[in-house]
Length: 129
Image 1 (cartoon, rainbow, N blue to C red):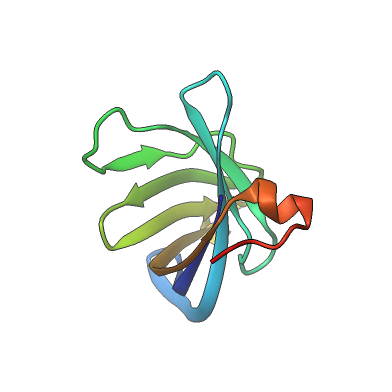
Image 2: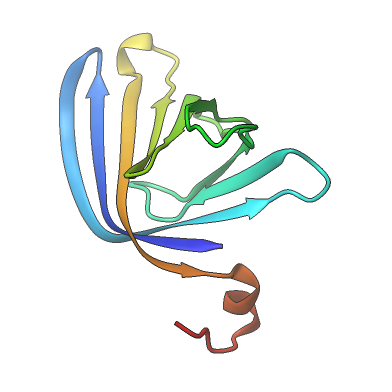
């Protein structure tokens, strides 16, 4: 499933100091359930530098809480996912050999604008709204 959000706010910090803030409208992610497992994969399509994917365990309850990101690509690590009624938040670190160069990143997605099934997107067939 591809989800388009009205807004994406990205905040970056380094050594506890604010680096920058970026606002992006109409940002997208894809979400896929991994067959025969309790895992899903989320792909961030509109990141600052590159798109990336990670896996996470599907929550067993309907209450939302912080979920650990699994299989983050290097140099990303220490990832968390939070979903609640109003937003989807991703937090992760861009690692570096020198700890003083590590950057903490927070993505906050709000306002779902559009949902599309990936099978229809990949087939090239028109998607009904």
